[in-house]
Amino acid sequence: MFIHNLNPVIFNFSFLEIRWYSLAYIAGILFGFYYAKYLIKKHWSKEKINIQNFDNFLIYLILGIIFGGRIGYILFYNFNYYLNNPIEIFFLWQGGMSFHGGSIGVFIASIIFAKKNKIKILVLTDIIVCVASIGIFLGRIANFINGELYGKKTFSNYGVIFPKVDMEPRHPSQLYEAVLEGLILFLLLNIILKYKKKLFNGELSCYFLIFYSVFRIISEIFREPDKHIGYVIFNLSLGTCISICFLIFGIITYKIFKNESYRKINK
Image (cartoon, rainbow, N blue to C red; front, side, top):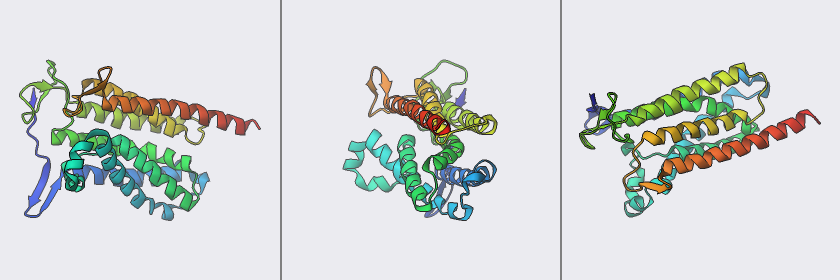
């Protein structure tokens, strides 16, 4: 039985404090970005994407993640709290980012960048989803270090005690998500990219929406819902409900993109 006593702060020098949560975001963005450049050269060379111009996408990506993730968390999970404490909207080091909101933010940023640089939007999103799980993996590890987003109570031997919550062993749901949404999703998408001979534009993006949603729904079974929200409907958490919406959207867009691709090939 592991007792969680990890320090979320790496080091603290008077006014300067570096946290694992911040480092996870920085590392996830940088590793993902440079891996994306490798994938462009290896798998999307025919698209003739200017690598030097693509470097500018890093700024768009960061803004999309931060603004989308933060606004999504505020709107989806804790609107009343931030309505009464607006100054804390800017306290990003305390956590409070929504993956679903971050995804929407990155998608909007991608549309703007793609139009400005004359890149096919679905090609760009396909590149992004192949590297996104790197950031998700590191982010979930940081959630575990922070002792947040913990799981439901369990009697299993691999339960973790979070003293700041209670002294009951709980599922380390953050680690489940790191494995499912991070490691396994990364491997799935990159294996499909490497071995599937023909991929239509947007196909990998659809796979990401579908697989991520399924993995998130599974993880939510073991995850304790937010205390101030609880279960939303039919004993489902808000994260599950939003993931179901993403799953449906992923399936619908897959069918639409596949039919459009089929029509273009057979004209």
